Structures are given as structure tokens and as C-alpha cells.
Length: 212
Image (cartoon, helix red, strand yellow):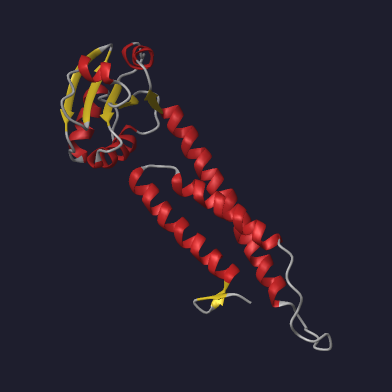
């Protein structure tokens, strides 16, 4: 049997994949990316394949009878854990993706901006951000939390690298930059990473009845 750090190769692969999965999930929570849940599903599939690989010939003589098979129990437990993990990871990814698309408008063009922001029937907070901007990854979750999942206010995300025309139109000089737009007009804005109170004040200016 091949050993790595004193444990079997299969066990080593299992442990390594789970450690990487947990680390990527932590990174996902910090950066609002989907790499963690995706890797969990990938890991579950890889480990399921490994579990299905037939075991080698038993090294014990045929006369040595076992009351139970530890390897069978080990595989059964792992298969159960993998199934639950894969389902949970897929469910988390799908739920998060659907909720984000429903409550957060991801703007990819000027036409998107006109339709989902300027012509919106409800006020919209527009968040200009960039993937390379660390403060942006801190501010965006705060905006999502304070805006919430109601229908009385919207949140639009504008990537400055993808939408240079919007950056020029609204004279965005730095990121993160947040605009509050109601009836096609900018009624408030701020630039940089601010505290929750300032964001809440901006939300309340757009929707006075919205309390957190």
C-alpha cells in the first residue's frame, strides 16, 4: 500500500480535498465568489469516483474471518457525507446565484443601465466596483445586507472595467463609488469604503420607510 505521511493514498487525497474545500469556502465568503461551493461539488464527485474503485485483494489469509468489514463501513460513511456535502454545496450555489440575479441587477451594458436603473419603477443604489478593488469586496456585501430582499429598492452592480462609458458619464474617479438614483436622477452619492450608518442613511433617503 502506498503511504503518504503515514496514511494511505486515498485517505490523503480525501483529507487534502476537504482542507482545500474549507479554505476556498472561507475565501468565497470574503470575496463573494462561487469558487468554494463549486470546488465542494467537484471534490465530492472526485471522492465518489475514488470510493467506487474496486478494492484490491485482501492481504489477510482466507481463514481469517471478520465479524465486520471496516473498509465497507468507512466507504458507507464517506459516501453519505459526500452525498450530503455535494447536495448542500449545489443547493448553496444555486440559491445564492438565483437570489443574487433576482435582487441584484448585474449591469453589463448601457442598455442594461437604462432599463434597470434609469427606467426603474423603484429607487436603485448603483455600486461602481472593480474585481481588483479590495474595499469593493468589503462594501458590496454591506450594500446587499442593508438593501435587503425587498421590492421597494434595487441594487445595481457596475464593473468599471466592463462599463467605461458609464464611468465617464457619471464621472467616477475612484472605486468603490455608490450612487443613489430615483426617477432617473442622482439624489445622493459617496466614494470609498464607508460605515454601515452612512449606507443606511443613503437607503433611508431613497426609501424613508425602510428600517433596519
